[in-house]
Length: 167
Image (cartoon, rainbow, N blue to C red; front, side, top):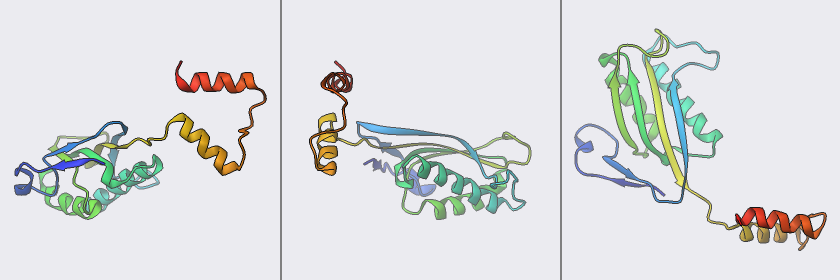
């Protein structure tokens, strides 16, 4: 679980955290810059729809990797017009709900294509599973109702256990 820290700055600017602490061991997911393109690669004419698409694309990337919005640690957002900031922050608030990652919002002259007006880059982290190798083997035995995990012979099992233990 990530811990959100409030130092008092973010509350004056928007719904984000001043700092986010990731407790180790953690699994990390780095999201590439994600534009608001539709599934067919087109960019909507309305900026708000483009921003909604961008967040939907971020959510889909998180979901595919087994992460959630609550796992977001740091989000960097790029807009090509300061005039879109207000609409963007409304879309972002609706997309994130209660999640409060650390944010950076930049207004830049241009993105990957001239018609793209928003791009979102993100880092997510979640606790790693704490099962050890032996725990996983025991769980498999219990699930199968047997002590045999299907090794062809004892040499194969010894080699597997030697490799899994890192020795």
